[in-house]
Length: 554
Ligand code: IRN
Ligand code: FE2
Image (cartoon, rainbow, N blue to C red; front, side):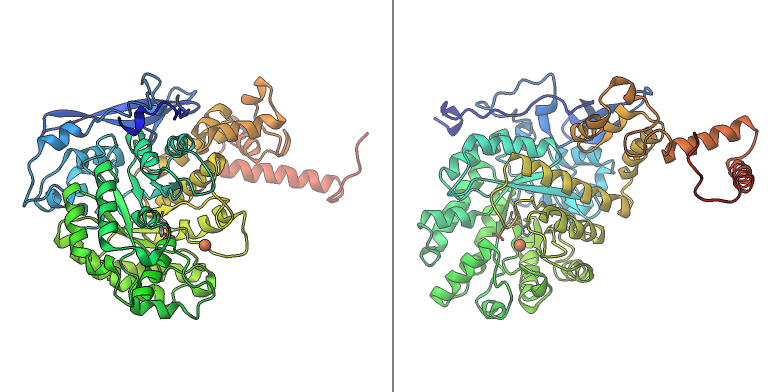
């Protein structure tokens, strides 16, 4: 019996298309395998007859023709691709294939998804500037890429804790997060039934799944870090690898000699994994087993094609501690470990902070690229200020947009509950939407070829008062429509040339349209029309006695 046969677990997952859009598939030929790949897109149909296709992370859940059976799990589409191929230099990783010049179906799928050339995808993976997190045991996932030359990605953390949440709730959080745009999810469960929760999530997840295995290892020794051993950790890794975890956070850069560097910090060590490893090193007065057994870890990761997410166990947990010696000492070690993993044909990304004021953000990216051979950077925010508990999705999105613009490849979301409690389903959505807008803002600034199409389509709809199109094109269509309908719920308001913010007389969009119309009718260019209109108004102003405030007319 597998975990999914357990009928006492009955997740209710959200399915059906997102408001105003439908699922379509691009058909892409993969010459190497002779297969046709079906690349999902979210198509937003517009009232003027056109449409726009958007990057889609939601999997079959938003496909109205798909049948969802959470007890069976998603279709294992990639299984045949994996079975088809022979190892290359004894390895089966995307990195090994990329280095050998092979374009895998995963790379071709990604190229179509991102609007890029397949060989460019391959070459970015080959030099380690991008990664494709795909455990061979997670064939249900849709291939995606993390790298600075691609769309900026976002990760949503889910998972229960010892005090709250059930398996069913976590499965729905995964579906819900990917519905709103999470590119990957991490299951950070630390409570009961860690193994079962993860099995349920992976079998039903269309996006890559990450974990922090030290959390489960710690549960196995009843929460006493000093009792951890390399063997317990290794067995935990293998257990999770077999289940299909695509990337794992490994805090292998927390070295014994770095721990004292945190003594004078305002907030010490805030990383959970980092503090566990620091406690172990101090208890035994030995170097971390993650560091001393690192090559064995590489061998295990290589077998499954698991990606390292090298943890920032010494990240700053406050503005005061940003960019300090402890943080950058660890980063140097992560750089060393990056190069070792690559020699084993294992993919790597690097985790980053945390809490960083805006003027110290760029330095983080510059140093990471220099020390870690441009391995994709994956940061937690960072929060640009510490003063707003309850709003840390916003304090951190400010930092996230900037660090994304500087070249960070994936942004780990922060929810309004950060520092306060376990996020619920609503917090997950707020976190995802907030991070999508940070990531997309970075895409625009970086000039990703497809990014601006979306903004232009929305702006056009806004200018032409196509309200329904404006809602449907929004990151969160339901909220956009609900806000509009709060004050103008009637159907005619969906075509009206104003909303309740400015009312009919003060709408700048309407006035500017009137100017254009006036120009057309009078055979003038818009500039001339404005000048003429201004002149008329000036005369009117003079006629009325040059008074700014006029008496109320009867
Ligand atoms: C991302 C960047 N830096 C940290 N993260 C995420 O924080 C990481 O991916 C994982 O989800 C979580 C690990 O937290 P600790 O154990 O470092 O606190
Ligand atoms: Fe924090």
